[in-house]
Length: 123
Image (cartoon, rainbow, N blue to C red; front, side):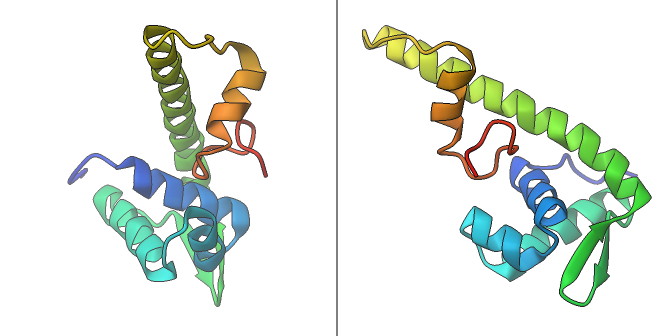
């Protein structure tokens, strides 16, 4: 049973841990501590009462349930990226600045956000 809605920070922690293979690498990417990343993932797993990552020493690999979960988490992170871009554009338009459009503009804005999917973020 779901005990609470997942936070963006929890989804980011799972995403980067899965992509980079360890809590420490995700922590480095997100400018957080390894224990903070592990705690976020543990809270996410507890909330859904399922193991999302297999921990093998210092390495972490998605479980089958984790792979399915991550597909949906990526959708949420993508939507968050789009929201951030739209609101940035609205603010710039209101302030009389040039309006950003298209993928290039998204990359410029979103590359500043380390938690976003690599498709939108600079490596």
